[in-house]
Image 1 (cartoon, rainbow, N blue to C red):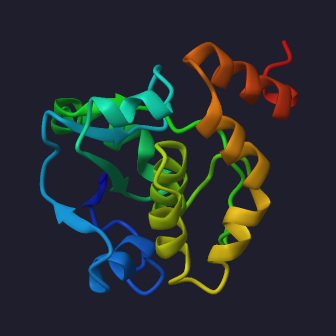
Image 2 (spheres, rainbow, N blue to C red):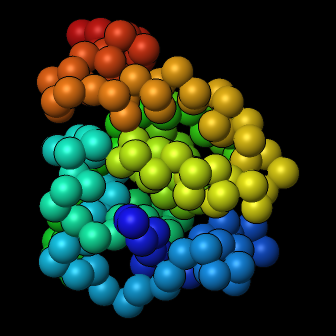
Image 3 (cartoon, rainbow, N blue to C red):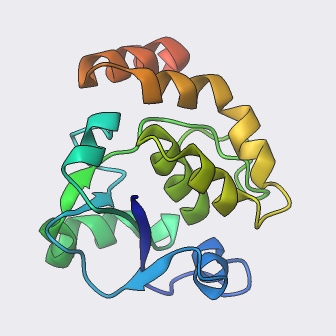
Length: 171
């Protein structure tokens, strides 16, 4: 069983914070620093998350911070480099603030997407069930999540990203 965790930096409105809601309902565990065997989701990471990562990690951790401050958080906080850094393959947001924007996910969406790709689909659905719009995230990304989860290697995941979002790869 992959344990979902969150490193909360408290940079957003606490009433809109999806991570705080998941912690409140005991669906994710709050951590204060990443462990060595923990996948740390990093939007600037070079290595994509894949199903094979479930063999090398005991938990997955999302960093709950403001999208406005992600540069400073991920480039200057050395504590984030303690875990196994992975970039979540591109998905569409379903949260009301960033609906259908590519890759601008809430913390709950990032955790749910990662759990789905790692093979824990039921846990991913449980997390999203806490939000009115949660089912929309899984429906909006259903084909993509399924293909990412079934990909045999990182090259296949990268190819899927390029085929679904070619506008991001045009030169």
